[in-house]
Structures are given as C-alpha cells and as structure tokens.
Image (cartoon, rainbow, N blue to C red; front, top):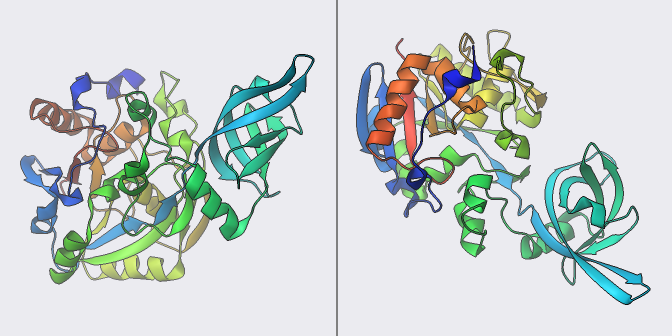
Length: 350
C-alpha cells in the first residue's frame, strides 16, 4: 500500500479560507453505496433515520498561537526579538510543550512577554519543542490566553491569511466545552442550533466524546509504505455514559455516525475489543484500508488533504476506488476543501 495510492490533484482555488455562513449552508456530498447526491448540510436529516446516533467531539480549541517579545541587555543596550509560539499540549509538570520560532533566539531561563498579563519562561528544550512555564494558571491563564492568543489555523489557511477575531468563533464548534485542542474537529463546524434542533425533532440522538486534536494532525506522511507510518498520539475520553448510549443504539439497530474523523478514531479505539467500552488515554490508532470497523456505521467528514492519514481513513471506510470516484465528483462539482470547506456524508454498503 503506497503513499501515492492516496494522492490526487486539487485546484488551489478549491481550498476554503473562510467557512460558509450560516454554518449549515455549506454543501454536503452524500455518498450512499454507489450513489452520490449533491445536497446542503441543513438537509442532513433527510439521510438519517430515527434511532440513529451522531457522535460529537466536544473538545474546545484554545487560541494557541502567540506572538511575544524576548528582551535582553547587550553591549549595545537593550535588544528585543519577536518570538512566535504555538502551544501544543500541557505537560504533567505544569509546563506547556510548544513550537517556538526562532527557537535559537531564546535561552533557558529567559522570559517571553505576550501581553501585559501573560508571559512565560523557557524551562527546557526537548526534541525541538520548547517547554514553557506561564506566569498564570487556571481561569486566569485561560482569560489571558483568550486575549493574547490567536486561533491556530491550519497551515494551508495560515499561508493565505492571518487568523483574526472572526476565527475565534468560526474555528470553534457550537458545543465546544473541554479545552485542550490546537485544531478543530472541522466536520462539526457545519452544525448550528437550528440544524441540531431539526435533527433532534427527527429522532436523531447525540453523544458527546472528547478527543483533543493535536498539531500532529497536520504532519505529512513521510514513508512510501503507509503501513509503516507512526501516528501521533492524542488524548481522548469516552465516558461510561457515552459508551452505554452507543451500545444501546447498536443493540436497537440504529446507526452510529461519528461527526468527524476525530470522533471516529476515538470510538474505534474504545471499541477494539469488538464492543464499545468506556475508555480514557492517548490514542495512536491508525486506520487504513483493511481496518475492521467495530463501532462506526457511517461518517460525516470534510474533504481531506492528498496523501494524508485521513484520506487513508475514508478509503478504509468506503473502499479506495470508491473514494477516488467521490473525490473526482467533488472536484468536478467544485466543492470547497479542507477545514473551512464543505462536508461529505459517507455511508458504506452494508
């Protein structure tokens, strides 16, 4: 299974840099077996049945991108350097792992000032990552970060424009509640309150799980034999209540449909025994063709990058040839791609 098997040509004009407004007005490609239907997200309920259950990732994206100053005295007087930081994850010792540019401009023990309220000291560097200790913790840290930080837009958007205040709302789901992600579960960005109300009225149930999406989601696959790729780890939790809801839906004959690849990866991690169970920890699950799905019956997801692990995941669900046909249709019909783009509902045969 070669990396080139998951490649395709995408016109750059199809990369979305802003989301549809309102959220549920985005286009929806419905692939059900061999059929493809062009629809709109607000009509999602037409393809769902009473008793189906959507799995929603309730992680909350933190404004993880920070710009600060390192100040230092020199023989020529005070000097400053602009330092760009992207927070990755909190560590057990109370520091944050972060990417820092330029890393060589900061010495161990030096302070970076991000705002009047927020600063951090570089305590260590390991494997190219900075370990930063902030001057604030808890709610005080969250408040200061919300003021000083920007949303960590994916590289393919950040290359086209900087993040702004609109992204603090646009790049967050309406049900986000557990802070810790540095990337959004983007299929969920299409949902608004009217759509959720319509689905509930149709008898569709919802279960919340948490997977903190990490920056590793954007890392390229660097091996030709994809089966040798090592996935990045991401922390997730399926509570006993969530597992019981999913199991009850399966037992009653309803379909379990994760919204987004993050929710799918998490419930499949929790279902590797053959049945869904409560689970908490770091998942490195890698789903590619040949994977046996234990929990998910379908998937709502955005359109993914060529040669990405997420292309491998949807190929595992639908079949590689079927996904190629679906993506050919999406490109010909000019669907918008990637994080702020349009959505697909993938329902495999059987």
